[in-house]
Image 1 (tube, rainbow, N blue to C red):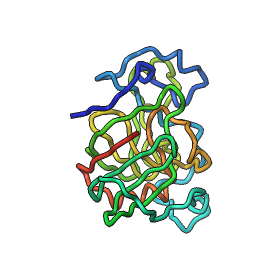
Image 2: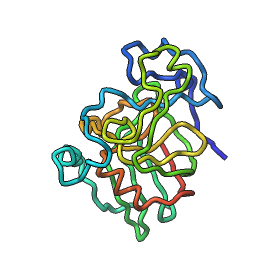
Image 3: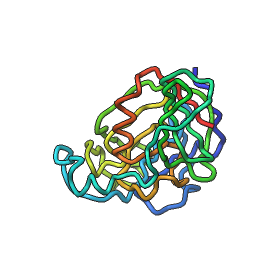
Length: 208
């Protein structure tokens, strides 16, 4: 059961491609969760299949916050994901008092949340379909965006419970370590691919 603590500010869908303020978006999404903010202004035009970590695009994905094994004395079982919003770090618990620490981008002021949930699905190069309410406001938006380097969800996505929150990649590595999203946890494509390979569906996610 989802026990996420989400404030009223989270109920307003956010238009990732527009320039309007968040206050413009008053519609409620299904189940009370916010329409997902993939955070636009993505760059690049390469097709999904052409993205390789040895390429120039891949070199731009190198984490400015190093991924590293650190001492971790939390009480959580191996395989648990713990996100520290204040630190802007994600810990993947390894056991033996160790965790793998990644830099992440988190929700901007008014879009932070905390709680416990599960990873319910994983997708490689996920696609994105804007909801109908967003299309009604912005008919210029694509009705569907295929997975690839231009997609705001990046190289991998791990879905949190039945919410529209995700742990996902990004091709804007300069946003990692900042509070920039509408609640999703973003990582560099390199780091999210590494985490994706370790995380199992059903893993516990703790955000605090």
